[in-house]
Length: 640
Image (cartoon, rainbow, N blue to C red):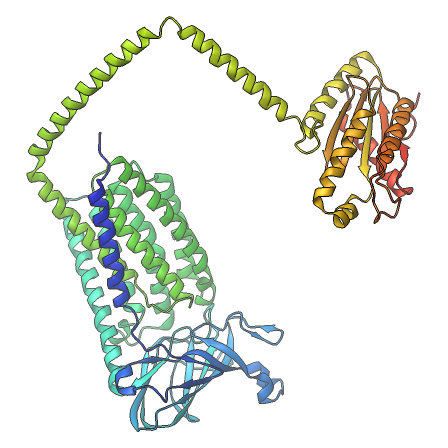
């Protein structure tokens, strides 16, 4: 039998997890956190030389193009908007913005009085912009226009030289979007000295190229292993996945692919970004399922390929404005799939499958980095894209797993000897335990039948008690709805065979909600209990049944009782409840608690159902309510 991982190994995995997250946290964004308010960012007290890159996050002023065209004054159309964030869902008055349109972002930056050489970095936007500094056009990416026929989307992170500046800068960014689901400044612009801004860009490019090179080499390496047929299809799928993610690092972040292929279109960049994600998920699932075929479902794998293929076809054959809207649905499906993989790997870990602990650890890192990328793309956090880093951690775990397998080969003989000794000890202990059990069985053999009989009797008594409790209303102590339904069905069949009348009385406490509102729910429960007791005391025959129908409604089942007899009994019930003298000051009917009652009777027919009798009594009850309450009404007289 395979053994589950030991406690020290689990502690090692947890320690490694903490170390990885510390590494990820240290590798995140290092830009100075300063927030703007009402379109003003105050940097006057900062040491610009040591502050590094400063994100222009917070409240910006915002003007929607159509508001200006409608003839409104400038002050009336200015609103506040959070950056970084898409303008989707932003409200201007009663208007909720969609993703497509044209808007202007404004921010005033208060600079230190000392003269410094500044630069402004603008990452990708949704999906074209023009940059104005102190009302002068400094540059832009794509063609920004409110006319969809003139606008052109483009991704290109830029660093703009602002020259020597002091005291104050006014930045305006006109953004248009007609080609993507999201529009606006969805990533953080940043400002700093020109040296710090270019250093930041070079650091980011270097990190992304490092991850690209590592992933690309690992991808080619595993494809080479597959070509030699030494590791089978697992190496093929893992190699393809590494190549896909390495390609993805070139079209996200600093988009280094533009340095290699400057003429590539924006649509091609977006399609590559989405396809590497949509195709990567089923390929990675296939890699995991090959390693753990007994835990991973083939049907789930086929379903994954199916929805991945469907989403990929939409990316290839539809416009970005359409397929960008599919991302959230694919993310939800992917997250559900990841939860299933975690479950399967956890099952493999419990079963003691070799390498399951390391694979699970690496997959959890990938899953967390995937969630980070989803939240980062949705502007919920600003930590950058980390899925490539997560994959690198996974690759390291696979390398560590290979090393552990090699070291394990040298200790196989010794471990087998130890297992054999432990097995012998376990067998000896089991033999002793069985011998002891046999002696105990022989010792108790004489009174075994008595013990079984006693236990059986106790269980029967307990079952009878449970059965009785399941048919009693917990508050009033009378029969509940379940018991009523059973009795009505039984009496319906019995009266049908004997061709005798079966009557039903429906009772409802008048204005019970007002009673609860006036006296409270504790008094209301007491009222229900006393009314139920009064109704029950009004009947004498053992076959008659009083049940709580629901809420403040009660039902009385009367076999072998005509409609006239049931009406007389209903009047007695009404008087007995009134005789309780329960005060009800808020009732418009009476200052005492009263009942409205509906009576119906029928000789059951095998072609009809008991529910028809209940409905007839219920109609009579509503007639009593409509005629002033505190009264008895009967259904239409029987024919014949």
